[in-house]
Image (tube, rainbow, N blue to C red; front, side, top):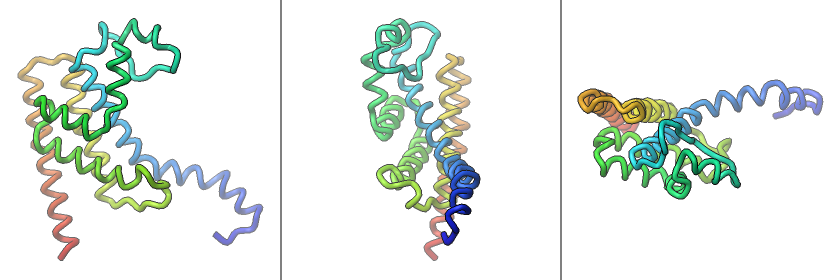
Length: 181
């Protein structure tokens, strides 16, 4: 940018934070999906004690957290890579095939920026859509698992989620083919 020092400082103070906020929004969709996938695993593995659930705790608060959660299992699952998490859920029938594949595609899109300065990576519209779709899938499964719904309702939610995920995958393949023509 070719701005005088005074204008540059105004830009840094007034405009840049807003731009960074807009650009990070899709990543908030990704973070929510990742958090919900982690919570689903913790819930299905039974690490929560009672109805209180713990999403995080500070270092040194293990004793207090132990009232609500199996601290060792919590730390272990928190450290799993996302791929391990969705593999676990798929293997255990919690994620069906299309939902699993869509979450894996979102993981691949996220990995483009994982070890690079986010400002240096250009995400496509499809990447942004994947993060939003991943959040939707994770949310559907999360609701069904978290609130101990009846098996028939869980089956319906999984089925509907799977149909939507399959449709999104078809749309992604079609767009990919169109770009390559």
